[in-house]
Length: 120
Image (tube, rainbow, N blue to C red; front, side, top):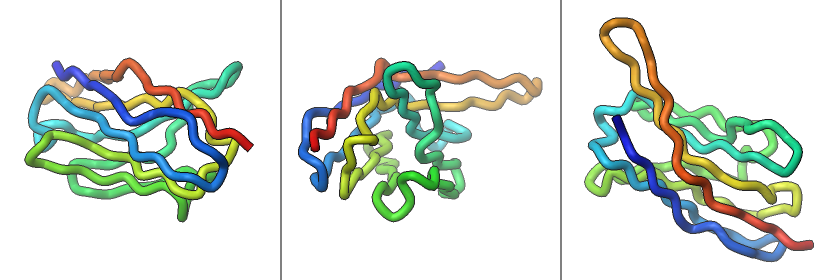
């Protein structure tokens, strides 16, 4: 299992920046993939920025060039740097961790979410 705790959300004006943090309860080396999702009111949760254990990312088109996912292995923490924020980025942002087991099964773990609100 893994527990995830997010922080760093808040209210920012359009064009501003925020950095979200996701602290994991275990070494992120042992986690097959992590990532950030967002869920706006009335919409489904969608993938924003994944990060595999090998360091591969694949950003959603809507955030390419503006958001950057990174990790600090010593702190077991994954970050999402969000620049040039737009009102449409307003959502609850969730950290996700995926574990793949030898048996072939897998498990998804979620943080509690952190609200990001971008005013125009």
